[in-house]
Length: 417
Ligand SMILES: [Zn+2]
Image (tube, rainbow, N blue to C red; front, side, top):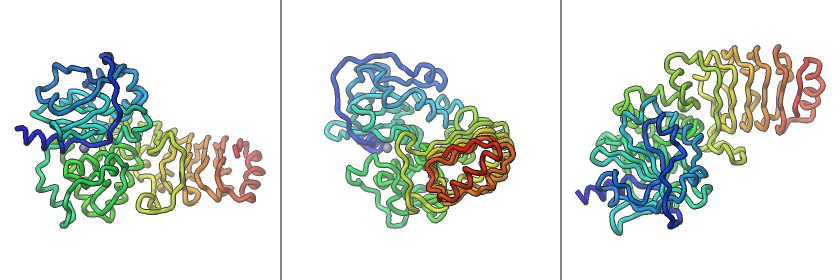
């Protein structure tokens, strides 16, 4: 058992270290409403966890968090809710995940084998729990959502290795990567691997594929894009989905497709049966609080990078907000959103004006702010219901700007420039 435990512990831990403190813990959770809704504990680790499984003290060391409120800086209830809402209803009750717990200076492993980790997800003897490391400075942990989904996958991962090995390049050898690659974002270091960390071990590989599908719509679409020419990744995504479906039948590719479009919570549930009843969709790219830097096309920023076609299934959509999603084009199916009255496209990197929106006859508010547009056709002013047009922070020619400035008032349109 100890050898097996060592193996399991090593295989399930990952992340980066954080400094420690030494004060008594609080036992109250700022996440009580979420605990009841999702059916799992969400709180700081206490100094002694008497009700945890026997192996827990052997598996993890940590320093208790002083106050539950400290977690809020790293992961607010709203942020945590947004991530947990991407899972099927009652998923965590089905999984029997005991909870998600935070500690400081979390290390995982046995005796001198211990490794500092950003998080750890356990499934030992049917006991499932997730421990997340709370960094001293919240900004020192850039990827809390990535880590969360990664660790959750560890708690349900029970795959035997042979079918997974068949997904890999023939010459693949998993091995420890340099420590500085651990915890990094999805960098697609070579065919078949979404991140450098995925190359360390098959379990980490699977958890990284899953995290890429769940963490952010932009990542989900990047994965879809990468696997067009990468049979290894395609095979791996299929196997990860098989595991999800084995856990809860409705955690299938259709569910993940909607998550990848940016849906969560009630809208996600609704999308599976009546997508035309969804009225609002707001999607943020993977760096919602940081400044946006337009990038050149490369393996991480492919051209074209098109908003998924299935947006056209949301026929009742009235408000669509895309912020810093990295999409370069809108699909033709956008034209079928005949109820859309508000379209906010901010911080995009459109390669050209998205012409499908010229067919949105109900559109009243349109923002194209900071979207890299060099041209905006004057036809946009002929949209019959349009009242507000925001074209700020685009590299428009002076000629285009003047034309819009002159024509907008004639159509009763307020131009923000
Ligand atoms: Zn891991």
